[in-house]
Image (tube, rainbow, N blue to C red; front, side):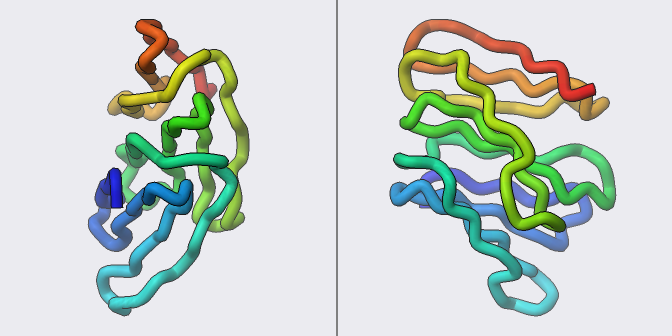
Length: 114
């Protein structure tokens, strides 16, 4: 695993891998609740929304893409393609309005989710 984060309510742990896969682990049931595979390369960073019952999370990858995922739909809901080199850090703000991502291209991108 290369990145992980708890959901705000601590019911799910999301973990990204070198294969570009994200696994959603249900803490209470002690089992995988979903597996996501859309990135073409290693996931370098992962961040969850800060709402108590949110099912959204974001990932950044060596494939240069940022993806916002929905656990309910079990797929990405959008892909952001502005970086030219691997995405190395990502965060979602406390108001769940913005995603910020940084990459090896030396750029910081701010994405408006509203």
